[in-house]
Length: 103
Image (cartoon, rainbow, N blue to C red; front, top):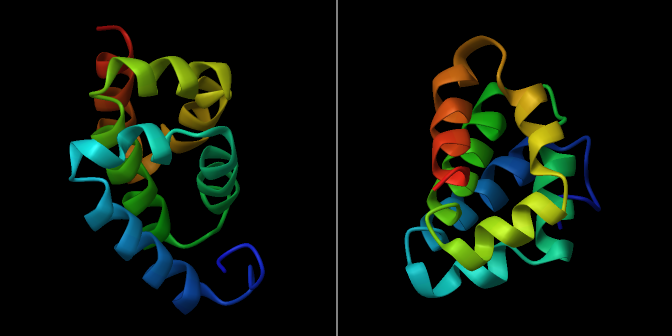
C-alpha cells in the first residue's frame, strides 16, 4: 500500500506504525527480512518524512536481532540503506543496527 501511494505520507506513516509494532514479535523477523519486504522498507526509507525514517530504523533494528534475518538483510543491501539513514537524527539508530549486524 505504501508503495502504491508514495506521495501520501499519512499512508506511509500508518504502514510503518503497523510494521514497527509487528517487528517487536520475534516470530515476524524472518518475514520482515524477506527480499520483498526489505525492498518495500528500503524504498520507504528514501522518503523525506522524518517519522517514516525513524520507524524504518526501529523496524530494521528490531529485525536485526535475528541471525537469519541479518543474513537476508545483508544480502538485500542493508548497508547502502544504512548509509542513507546514518545522517541527522537517525545516526544513533543506524549505528545500533550496524552493531547488531556484526553479532
